[in-house]
Picture 1 (cartoon, rainbow, N blue to C red):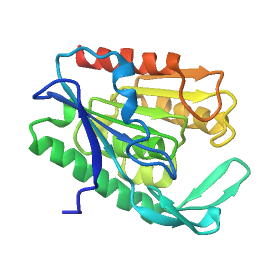
Picture 2: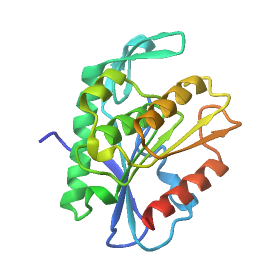
Picture 3: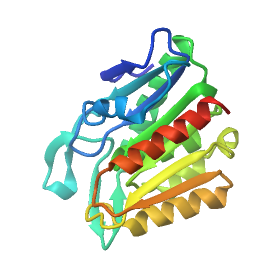
Length: 224
């Protein structure tokens, strides 16, 4: 059993019945999105536990080996493509699955767990959500891409072929070009996953309209 990643946790009410595991972007940490919870305007019941894990520290090759929190190394950029370290993706996949297992131990079954992430964390959300062997409640992928189609294809889960996906991207994103977001959402749609796709006139981040849309999408999952 891998060591459980340290995380920031928030609950919308005592005795949560649902969980959202939300991964941050490259160089950030679990606090990056923790403040978003009240802005989602979620109901008091059923209660939701938000888990915002901290990625491990590692050198990032494309950033001259600078050490920062990351879910995997990025070896280089070619045009818009990111060449990711697949071994690192697999390590983070294992670590995030351990967080899912801990939620199971705390009484939250997989079908009431949403996997979310922004940027590199969103890349992990796609990877974890589409490969997890038990059905999950949903996937939230923000300003992101699929880091390894080969890894995804080799581990793709039949259990999550119909898992709904919320994907959003900024039209003017200079960090993860929207073309990468388009490619990812088209691939996910081709797998048969129900997908809601949103574009916003922003750069690499989220805005109020996007936060409200995420909240509405989560509420729809609670009532499904």
